[in-house]
Length: 289
Image 1 (tube, rainbow, N blue to C red):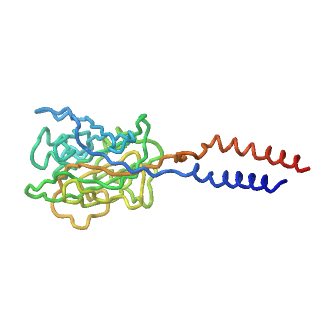
Image 2 (cartoon, rainbow, N blue to C red; image 1 turned 180 degrees about the vertical axis):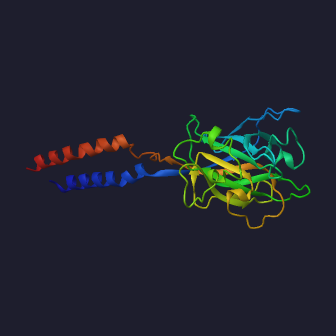
Image 3 (cartoon, rainbow, N blue to C red; image 1 turned 135 degrees about the vertical axis):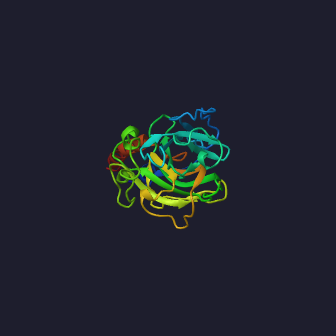
């Protein structure tokens, strides 16, 4: 075989091997959601319980997040029921069934005064399939400074079950104090049958300034963000008074398959090249004979 043919085959083979890692890699795609612009359907005297608000990411991936509200009815009835997620200038708040329709005071925020409010975030692709998201940061756009409040603490939980949650049984109907084992486990020891506490965090008191959460990079399609409560476990360092916030921003990331850069063969091209190499070698051998 001539020296030229040896060099040609060596370059082709080594180039094929070098390209394989590019095909196998995945990209980490950062995404942001601005929680504004939703028509929540509420009207005077009708909070519109069981409603939802959907937002599309601002990065152009088409990933959506659907927000719904949940809460225990009041301080004496701890059963979890659907509530109304409300769109305000400072972000998303909650009207629960113990509060009714209101646009003022701490009761229109995500709060823990009497009832405990939660917002469930469900992430989907542009095609409507579940999107597992590493939720990394949250921001508030307003916090209540009413008497007895003036704090911004939240509890964050992620669904770690083997299948999607059934909200009629995995959330609705639970009671905070007797069923907390169904709404809390340590994220370092995942509960494959339900919700895991990711952590308790004091949100940055500067409006729309993100606060980092989820240091273990847990990914899930379903996230609960609630006003802080001790019933989930853990604590928050500087908790003082009641909490009432409106959530304004979410930041996260997800993995997507890598697309080879321009000029790099797609997987089918690599397979074709791999099939041609033995033929080139045999032809070169015959010519050298």
